[in-house]
Image (tube, rainbow, N blue to C red; front, side, top):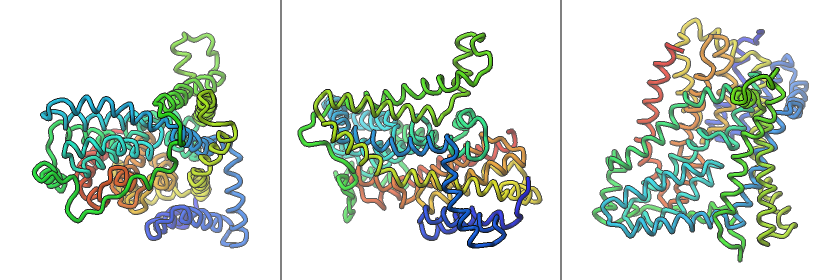
Length: 494
């Protein structure tokens, strides 16, 4: 494949440098796309600008891109529904009943049980990382305070299971976004590659496992040990002089006044979305497999799932969930028809920035392919870098970019556009490459003090934000170190 030499590196490098310097991911991606098309237009700035505009329009020529962007916007409507209907409040109320029983037990093991329950609840809420952190913080903060567990520990638990859970259970916007990025790199079977990459996405597994080990062993390190000692001996759940963040400020949409708090108003819509995803994959993939009617049912089902359209499945799933939600809430007379429509637009509007980010991610992926960025990077690296070290380097660079910018999704957009072509040119395992980029993006985002999930975890737990960042950093670094070693080892075998 032809490439533009050193100029082919400019778009992703410019996007990375500007994102780190300005922390404005949208602007950085736009400028990266623009400089790419200016290069392709032989440095004619006028033609390059027109080509940039056309490239953004052309994103929607790909049905998969359009479906993914639609899903990412519509999931905002579903989130608005379950919040405003009282579904989240009902779920919180339901869990609190169980917590009251736990609290009535002797205090010998109640601290451990409550923390494990917080981990389990957060793991179960995989539809969206912010909802995950908000729910865990809101539910468990009162009982953590009563049991004298420091707020920093609650923020750490909430933060460590928000993004890791969402990326490991791809039945949400995360899965759709990642499949869209893989499709944008010309990979014909993005679902299969994503599923193969997930076991190789080590950091989220290790981060969640670290939380369990800390809870069960009751062994803390670094600043968290001091926080636990302060809470146990002095009864102070936050440090003297700390400034707790207020969780109510991040709750985008409160329960409608007078609406009953019913857990089923959250559980049924989410279950519908989860159930419809494999149904959509099977249906969309059934016609793609030749002679599928001659295969045994189990084998035919597996083939259909592996050949199904991920973007089609998630779009059908979220539309089904929205429809079920509308019927559910209307039958309970919680919302009138006009309120349902207004709430849908409000939820979609709240996630327009996400849709724009996805559009830009697809666009920078295309211009990087046109320039041959990955091919040139691979040729450059061959002269001094063994292919065995590429996975760990991609993990480290992705971690740095995500930490500096506070966004894992923006990191995925930039690094997959570079990493996948490199892997293809240097004959490196693509699933391992994808896993390294995803793991690095989540790690950097997890640790970053400017990350949305880090801030929301502090807010939902009413913890001092800097104290939260400092206390969780040793655990995150420990998990990331193990992940880095695994990428280094597997680089020699895959």
